[in-house]
Image (cartoon, rainbow, N blue to C red; front, side, top):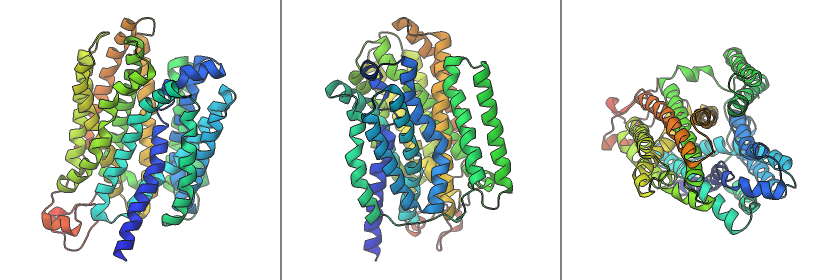
Length: 484
């Protein structure tokens, strides 16, 4: 029986990991293909940018909804539905005859990804015992990092070597293979609330939609324009109404008691800070190699690998280190490394900066990302009851994706105010002005990491599975902690 359970856990990691890789890859894979898409389908550059924004928007808005649907209708069942939606949307994107059709297909991809992503975390957490969960979630973080790492590189390689449609066609056979595997190998589970909180779903979805739309459009329309101010104001009001409803609802989709936990608040705050700084900086740095230094999309994507590739290599190690030292020091070190790395980049960047001078700050920043990618979900899940894992994972994924959207929007706005695309020097000036904003936000995240609960562990406690956020027999008192 134990062998069967271990085998099922491993297969859960394989199936959920493959689906997670597809959705993570598609967050960054399209950016380098915009020029080819414009030549093939026509349309303005602003319209083509929505092929990126439509995915991010739908993904960020519906993450909490995806987790809630899994709790209500079954996590395995909704995971299969999400993979099916993502696969069908990928085929529609590859077959798109116009930019508008492509944008619609990308939004549908975001819907599928929003269902799949939080459920991968819940399925893996449910499949592994507490003493092995940190290592499993370290692999989960490494898979996420791999998708992020390979996104620009794969996109550039496919565009230059085949055609932009194959960015999407590649998802179809993977999705078609995952559906029967998931049906056979995954274990069904539900959340504690069998009733769907429809008013809560409507309020949080429309609130995040309005907020995210305002953040994305702020750079183009102006942060003080009526449309942006109204969108941000409506988003804030709707989210406030959502909080009030959840406080009164008999079956809330996001229990407000989560926010009484110091671990939950600090872990989500530092995740927001990391995605704000990391994704905002990556967005501009990938363009730096093309606009300021004249490289093609494949070469530009390859030059980001010392940065974006580190999570793939170091996230599994982070899980092992967390088992020994706890999540707090790992996350604090990770955010500090990212702060140092981005500050280093800002100091050495110039139009003609040799790539060799960027390898060290890229690597430092990437290692820091690895420590936070995998440890923040573990800290969040340890701060809630096991039956609340679906809701907690949906919330933390939504918060960090909104952080990514805000990071790109704010850093792009600072960039536009201090530089532009007129010349390599203008682009570099804007980039150098924007990076310190990311540095400040990441430094704030470092302080938040220090507020998460720590734990001291002994070999006996480790053998008993102590220090996972769950009280277990045989754990010495000093090795146990309750998330606050």
